[in-house]
Length: 289
Image 1 (cartoon, rainbow, N blue to C red):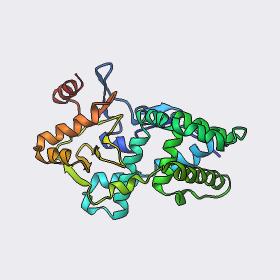
Image 2: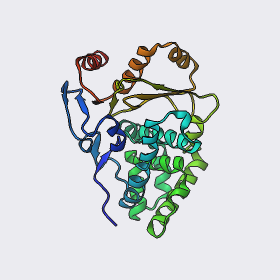
Image 3: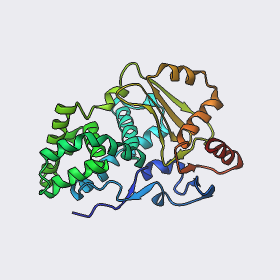
Image 4: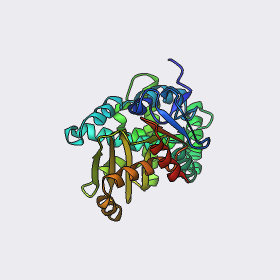
């Protein structure tokens, strides 16, 4: 088996390429523009280390397996997507949020209550089970289990060693669900009839992206609002928070563009743009002041 990649793009290259193969990038800390390849931005070395088996047979092919559906959604209206494609978009948003370094740090803190329980049920003399415990301590285990649960474990039943690996992960998921009612299926909360969804399309390529492209307010299993710029021309607003929904509906065209771009860049360290001009630079500086 090939060794898993060490350079982990937490914002997939196929997603960023909507802003160009060599997008204009604003470095927040240095307050300057540069123009790298998508291969060299929004990545960290060894961000998702858990075990070679999980990384090579799960993270690379499955978490990054939404490219065709995302490209279709970027170029077609929501009403033209199939039910399955819409579910894939929701899953992509959930995992794009979860795989961000800031989210993984939060998962690390969220894992702390589980550590004593895992130490009791895992045999740390076994290299795989030790890597699971290490993954719980660094937050990556939560990402992996959430993704497996969200995508559907049946997608991962393979042959040989992979089948054994995912069987162990399935047992772990069952234990956590029984003892802690976790992980939940966040997809179900997106599909709830009380969730408001809006696809906002513009004619000029003014939507920005960043290395923290999913804005989320609240928790998926409670009250939440999500905003994401899917491309330079399109953004999604998803919410079950009535006050925020009403506020969004009252925004005019320019107000919505500013809203989506503000939510996209306010927690970021790198900002991606299809074009570079004084208006965009001024907007970025105003938001980040």
